[in-house]
Amino acid sequence: MPDLDRPRLALYVVLALAVCLLGARYIVAQASPPAPAPNGPEAAGAEVAGSGDGDASSVRVERADGGRLTVHVAGAVHRPGVYRLRAGARVDDALRSAGGARGRADLTAVNLAARLEDGRQVLVPERAPSQGAPAAGGPGATAAAGRLASGADPAAGTTVAPAAPLNLNTATLEQLQTLDGVGPGIAQRILDYREQQGGFGRVEQLGEVPGIGVKRLATLTPLVTV
Image (cartoon, rainbow, N blue to C red; front, side):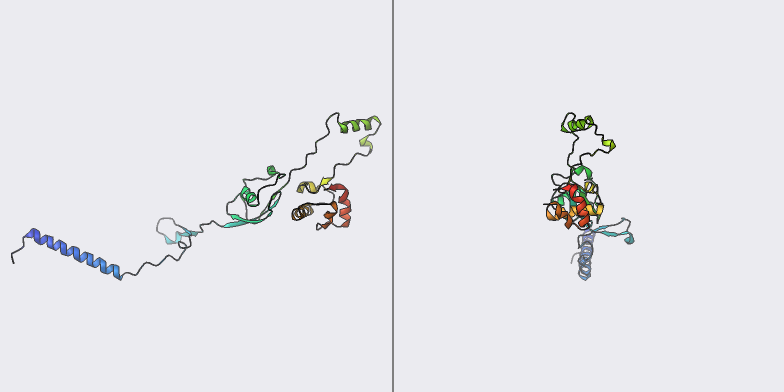
């Protein structure tokens, strides 16, 4: 066999080392166990956040959905009820879930941009019916002038025409509380009854509201209408 020159001998040595290195890597790869499938927050779609400095104790797990909250939407909306919304939702989102506001809803009394809190009630009131004062020279002014001309003095005890009865189907929570013996609790129960029954068909149905007995119904009957 002819003697090998130095360049060819060096090439053979490099090739032999490369073959040995590849063989060693193959053996190590075969001996290593397969990586386990994810079985933690990553597999459940959770978001894992860390400080980035390699400290395992600083890692925290957060749910991807951010949580949920439950609110009660009532008042002048199409579908009053209890709704579950995403965390961070606004009052406007709750109204949309309840079918939107009704035509007589007073949205100026509600902060649509307010952030919702779990367990709270969103109450949408109705607009108060317009009750404008009689114009100068109108029938009201003429009647008042007639009373003054005849010597009738309201300040001296003369009977004045009573105010118009309150409509049970359009009255707001605040207006109902102006009735004799009606507080916030009874006023809210009247609104709840109105929503459940689809409105009052007659004044006597007021007696079916919890907390309104026979005596109180007799007091309220001349003060309300339907």
